[in-house]
Amino acid sequence: MNKIPFNKPFLTGNELKYIKDAVESGKISGNGKFTKLCQEFFEKEFSSCKSLLTTSCTDALEMSAILANIKEDDEVIIPSFTFVSTALSFIRERANVIFADSNKHNPNIDADSIEQLITPKTKAIVPVHYAGIACDMDKIMALAKKYNLIVIEDAAQAIDSYYNGKALGTIGDLGCFSFHETKNIIAGEGGLLSINNKDFSKRAEIIWEKGTNRSEFFRGEVNKYGWVDTGSSFLPSEIIAAFLYSQFENLSTIQQKRKKLWHLYHENLINLEEEGFIRLPHIPDYATNNAHMFYILCKDLEERSRLILYLSEKNILSVFHYLSLHKSEFYSTTYSGKDLKYSDYYTDSLLRLPLFYDLTDSEVNYISENIQKFYSK
Ligand SMILES: *Cc1c(COP(=O)(O)O)cnc(C)c1O
Image (tube, rainbow, N blue to C red; front, side):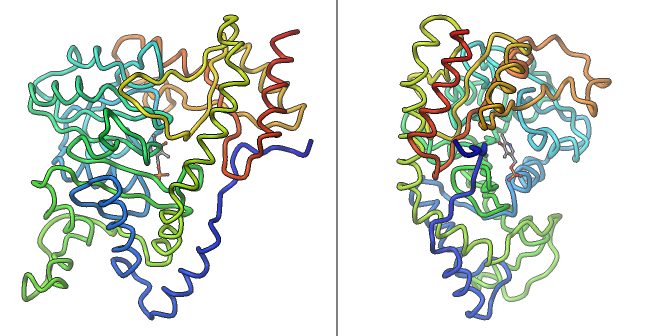
C-alpha cells in the first residue's frame, strides 16, 4: 500500500476557471462578485441572516471579540481542548480566558460545568463544535440569556452540521467558520463570520472594512465614506472567494463522500468499541455528523503512541490533536483553575485517522484492518 496521508485538499475542478473569471473581470480586491456569491450561498443554505467572508476563522473570531466589545479583565469562557485561535482572539483584547472542561462523552465543552465559571466579569461563552458535532446549545443559550452573555460559536469544523435542525454557527449571536485546507470546504486559508444577532450587523461590516463605512457607501446608503470605528482588513480577495465558490457549489457531493467514508470506518471498528478496546465518536441525539473527522479514543497516551508508530510502519499517517490550552507553554503559569480531567484525557487519548475526499474504501479497509491487528496482538 502506498503511503496514506492524513489529509489531502480536494479540488472540484472549477477553482481555476472561477479564479480566471475573477482576474479577467479586472476586480480582484475583496467584496466583489464571488464574495457576494459565497455569502449568498451560505446565507440561503444555512439560514444565516448575514455573513461576511474573512481570511480565516481566526479573523472571524477576532471580529467577534471586537463586536462583543471584549475589554481588559473581561472574562470569556472557552473549552481548554480547542485550537489556539479560540483563546487568542480574546487574549489579544486583554481579556481573561476561563477554561472549561470537556464532557465525558465527547470533546465538546461540558455545558453543565459552565454556570459555576460565570462571574460578574463574564462577557461571553465560546462553544467549539469539535469534529463538527454540536455542543449542547439549548443549555448554553439558556445560560447566556440568564446572565446576559454573548455566545460566539467556534464552528471552524462545523460547516453543514446541525443542532436540532439548526445549522451550527447560526445559533449563537455570532458564528465563526474556517476554510483552511484541512476542513471539509476549503479555500487554502479562509473563513466566514455568520452574524445571527441583527444588533451586530451594521458594525460588523465596518470592522470588516478597516473601520470605514465603505460597504454602506457602495450600496448608496451614505453619500461619503470615512473612518468611523475600529477594525482591520478582515476581507479576503476575490481570488480566494472564487476558489471558495467552486467548493460551495460542490458541498453536497463533498459531504456525501466524506460521510460514506466515515460510516465505513465506524462499521469496520465498532467491534473494538464493543469489546472495550477503544471508544468511537459519540454523537448526541440533538446533533448531526458532518464527517469532518474520524477519531478513536485509545486507553491512554502510551497506547496511542504505540498505535501511531504501528500505523506509520504500515504507511498510514494518523495524528493526535489539541494539547489542553491551560497546560500550554503560553498559559500554564497563568492558569489557576481546577484540573480539567477530560480535556487532559482527550489530549492523551484521541487519535485522528485519515479522512479526505479522495480516500478510497479500500484504504479505509486497510487502515481499519491494521487497527484490528494492533488490538488483536
Ligand atoms: C481550524 C480551526 C480554527 C482556525 O481556523 P483558521 O481558519 O485556520 O484560522 C479555529 N478553531 C478551530 C476549532 C479549528 O478547528
